[in-house]
Image (cartoon, rainbow, N blue to C red; front, top):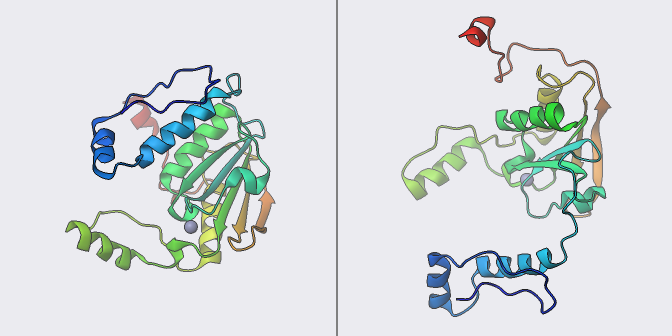
Length: 219
Ligand code: ZN
């Protein structure tokens, strides 16, 4: 298989070589694989690439935490351009330790001062629960992973808990603005449920992202 070719006036050569699995897949179906289609699309994209000088620091000093739901297009939904914001996505748009890890990097290293949490209607994480999801995984694989799936029992409570978790994170800069919103997937509207406030976060010992003790730092 030849690498995906760009338009005739493309200034660049395709940069990706086909993988063994791609070749095998094409041989089976006779049609371009999904990865081949993606590479072809990227070839066209890179031909007109104009973002070479874009800074890594988000221009709007904004980070968005939202669900991985395929119906959500954060940039279009919020009128953002490439380079405006960090977008952190996972199942449910939940604020996990890893979300806080990224927000700490966003704020301290890359200048983010506004955090917007966006949950949404018809979220798959509200249509299941910890036990059901665990059973699905067990049936398919024979075992249940030892992790919290962060399913959503009460959407309002889940949004409030996620916003509160960020506001109370002791490792984010004082004055960081945090707000909570619901995106309605059937009409595209965004509802502000928890307006931004920026009190100095109150450190709480219950945070799972705990500070290292002085002794640990010395060790
Ligand atoms: Zn969702």
